[in-house]
Image 1: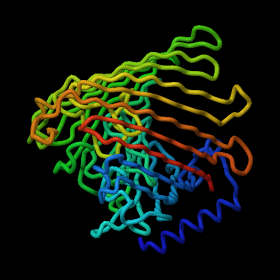
Image 2 (image 1 turned 30 degrees about the vertical axis):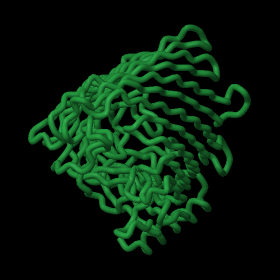
Image 3 (image 1 turned 180 degrees about the vertical axis):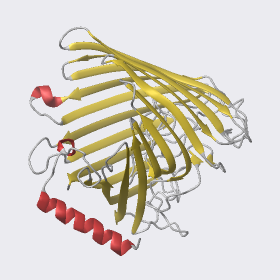
Image 4 (image 1 turned 180 degrees about the horizontal axis):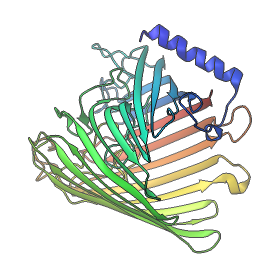
Length: 442
């Protein structure tokens, strides 16, 4: 679609929303293709700066990346045609607008990933994403074909930048058994947060681009009761890896105000087929235990990678359900073990509903690349594998969501991260300011 046309469409939707007011999606009863339809607009204002203290990961060696941009997403979801088998159509149009950045501080093609850059390294003024999904509902099963947003521990779209990541392919979800959600999919391409293409090749965080034709997944989540849940998933990135995930989460109420909670996450990742990412066998896990009392929540977690290589996952995705995965570091290097302390505060109890705070501190040690394969190997200046690597990260976050009135749903979020490491990672400071305003039009 022409960019001017898409921009006009989005702007018109925003004006319509302003006159229509917000309508709760939960109040809309799906009863037919048209009657069950809804149209929504999400405005996201995104400011991000990253200060690499030694300049090693900034595009021009300045040590500083900064961008301010505005994203608009118009999302349409139809209902289903009547009958045993119902058909529907979903579509979205996204626009990213540069507000402020510069050649020396736009992040280039690093993991900063706020705006796309051209061949000269300059940030684009704007970019768009257009996608659609055909869907089918039969009994308790929904099948979608097109541009999809899978959400599970092994393939999970990322939404930590201006515009979200998406995938192209087929997905299936079934909820026939009470408490059990089963889902699967086969995806042939992905769209990075800064890409207008909806069918890019696959890429991973640590190995980069990988010439794999598809990724597939299957698994489910089972809620045994309000206090105990289980997850089991498997996935294959063709000719690269097989991954299996097992998760357990639970809560134990001790009184009306006090409860204990905890969980375990475990991944097993092994090379597959042509072994495009080399030979590897990684087993990584995390375990968490905490206590919640009134407005306060405190948790401690431990995480350990038993493999000889980085535990990898799809680039800019959220498919890493490990307790110590943080704003910047994931603490998933070979042989690395880490501890995290986390504190959350919900201000509702103190008369400010919608306001919350979070802080966490994680420290990792013993990362060792001595036996890493050629793809994941990291070496020092003398060419020797890095050993006994250490790092730590401290994150602070404040968030406020307007609870009522015409601005209901408007949210303000400030995230700050400080990370320090030995040779294998960057020393950096980050600040992210995210303002979102969701509007339900129909």
